Amino acid sequence: MFSKIVVGVGGPEDATELVPVVTGLAKAFDSQVLVVHMRERIVTSAATLEKETIPESFRFGEAVAQRLIAAGVKASSDIDSHRPDRLAEFILEKADEFGAELIVVGAHHAHGLQERVTGDLGRKIVHGAHCPVLLMPSDE
Image (cartoon, rainbow, N blue to C red):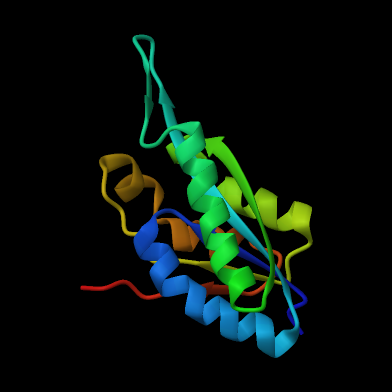
């Protein structure tokens, strides 16, 4: 049913929640999993602001894929940079490129004014996806 699954992970808390769920789904459907990690970059006229370095982002994404592989799942990772306002589009593009039949993303809440105005990540992904989407709940 879900031969290809894209998993969007933003940080360690996402990975902790998502890996067991994705492992179960991937084993049940003999799925191939693509772990997508988004390295956020904000380019201003004065500087480029980054939450993590390029090597840190690659290590994190690969570590999540390796956890899935260690659990017996066929997994790989795709790490790229994005603008914060294009996060949903980024995940949707990766899902389309991969031919995903399911997208799994961790909880994400609007933190800034832009997100409150334009909507949250889950809503954008659900409305733009060409396949089912599993949104994981967040801790309180």
